Image 1 (cartoon, rainbow, N blue to C red):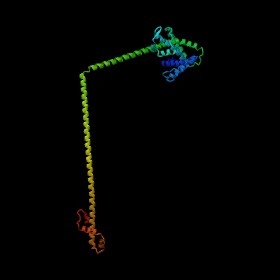
Image 2: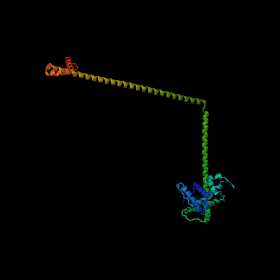
Image 3: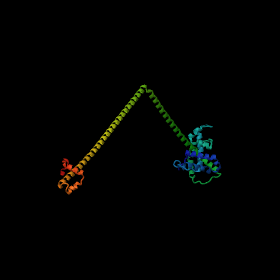
Length: 345
């Protein structure tokens, strides 16, 4: 069975909730361990397990919280043993390097006096046996429905004696591993920082050397290159402006020429229209003249065939206006026009 393991974040939540209940005076009113630790367990589960089961897979019972409090007590003693400089002096600032919640535990539960450490060989044997006992205790957590009464202190002392043998060594081992990991991480960061500082120092030194080597002649040469480049850019700009101006003039000439050609075309069209109207009027006049000539000829022929004005035809002709008879008589003396049709002659 996989052994349950508390994360440091869950430990911190446990300590914060326990401290809150302690300051409010709630814990002093509760007489049994179940009543004391059940609100803490529910709070830790609500903050971590229920929100993120993947990262926090374990659901803690009030017994787990009670055992964890005892384990943290031995973990605190193990870290305190490591930071002891002399029998009565400790390097408290180094405590969080071994256990992140070291000072938080001290703030909640107060300082704990150091005890004699058990022998390593015996501890190594008892760790294995007590691990099995702790796993069996974990299996019974969810099925335990009994309520503690005033005899809970005796049971708590038994669990304390059981956990004391395991907690100190296990937590000390974990603390040693974590401390070694933090030490290696600090050394890695320190080496990385030194390498970065060395790189920056070399880059700064290289730039200083380059600036010293940048002589006055090179500065003048650089300025001349910049001047030549500016002159070429100015010439390009002037040439481009000239080309644009020439193109604008050419387009203007083309537009003016197109306008002139359009005016000439309009004038030619107007002249052709006037000439066409004149020709139509001339043709109309000529048609009228031809008709009058035909009428004159017909009147003259009638006069010749039917005699003078003594007969009926003459009487009829006598009724015509004098202008028509005069014009008809006059036309009779006029020779036909060469342009007149031959069938009318």
